[in-house]
Image 1 (cartoon, rainbow, N blue to C red):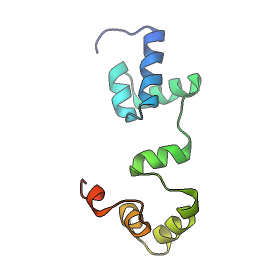
Image 2: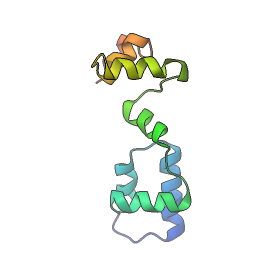
Image 3: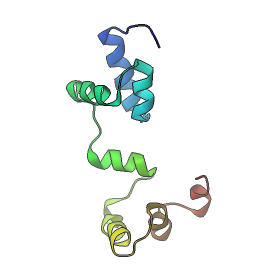
Image 4: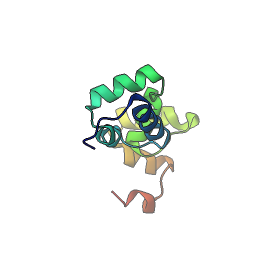
Length: 100
């Protein structure tokens, strides 16, 4: 987008992007700004992801609270990768993780 967006259109794209869990790079590309600028704007309008939401988004799956401690123990002590831990704990099936 080479045209300059007004602030309301920019705000709507950011809110929709965060609401649809789009990658931040994609949202920044839509509005034609840097990633840092996007994060500042999102923070000002109050739609940022919590650290837990951001981690779930990067991982591609959610860890239930009752399995969180086991997951972290496998990651740190067992030296497993995130997907391997999810398979061990039954958070992912073998079929859903083969799409890597």
